[in-house]
Length: 485
Image (tube, rainbow, N blue to C red; front, side):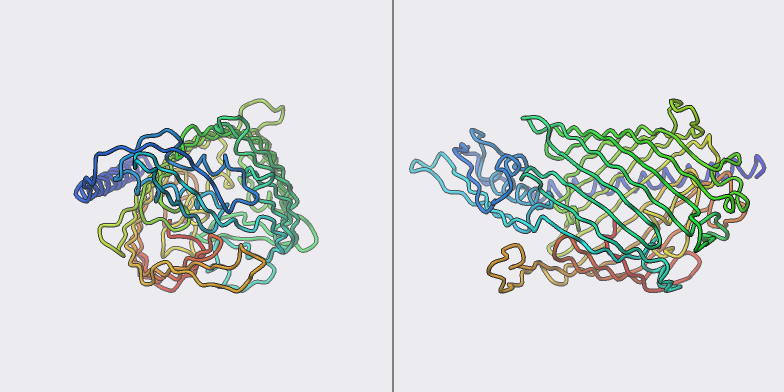
């Protein structure tokens, strides 16, 4: 790319980022206006929180439940605040993924100036010996193109949630198939009495007989060897969290990574790790700040979420450390309900990455964990990208509960579900200064539009069918198992 083209692409990317930022600010302003317009004063009288009792928590410690409430004993609260805080606290409890249902009720003293609360929860089933049978492809739609049964993982994940009743999680993984895996992880959300400090540890070993060694025309190019492992990965992670309030988290992770590829991959792509390296061994330091005030983490309709992510791969500590990259990633998501049954969601994400190790492996952008709808079949690699998504939802079937006659298994007696119709519009830009010559979706604006239907049900399960069209005028139906964003 000559200097003139490079300058054009940079200016275009800057204009795209500015446009997305303006749209995001407009959305926030609109939400603020709607919120102010809908508020009203019921009563200014204050009541005292006299006591809070819990019920239904056969395993969960009471302090884990109290941690998620927006009020505590001796707080003063008005009637207007009361119902808002009850609704918010019930959502907070569900967002822990410890409970299927939560219900907060209250009574008052004879004088009517003191409130007594009861928090009733229905606990989930916490021990899951999960036989695993999953598709390895980037999404279901790319797998359905080939229906290649070789790209299937099978094994056993033994997951124990809410260990010791303290919201701790232990995971033991053993998997064969496309990506062989053996690993163990343990998460302790609260180490201290104030329940502000947490920690986690994990270790995993992975191996593959098939590897994507290049991207051509925005499609991954694979090599497969049934007899030999082409790539192996070892990752050890130690992390710490700090959660002072309910909605804010600070996360720091220290990660050791060692990746190695077979000679055959190195011959096909000497720049897989950069500079003809056959392995990449490095220590990463990651920092993540999260603010999450959404009503639901699974399918949010109201609230706000934003995140800042910083990552330095390569700290120049190891003797053979040959990686030196820096990433900065910012995400803002906004959800609101201007009318009953209608909701709107929008998000902006911008990532900047400085690659001093100019390897193909480190150049991933869109099409992996994040993508523009309508481009499910493509990957768009690059160092820097910006993406804007918006969703308009109509609640076709409001949340309902089906009763199941499992008298001895309280965790499975009620099945909640809801159905939503939606329309969406996405836009983005990926800048690639290294491998752009073989991929024509980089360094230009792209967009997708469409409509869909979503089923939200038991144990955080989402089934989504989208019909989307991209700027190439390609269109089709796509299946997803997560919320739109």
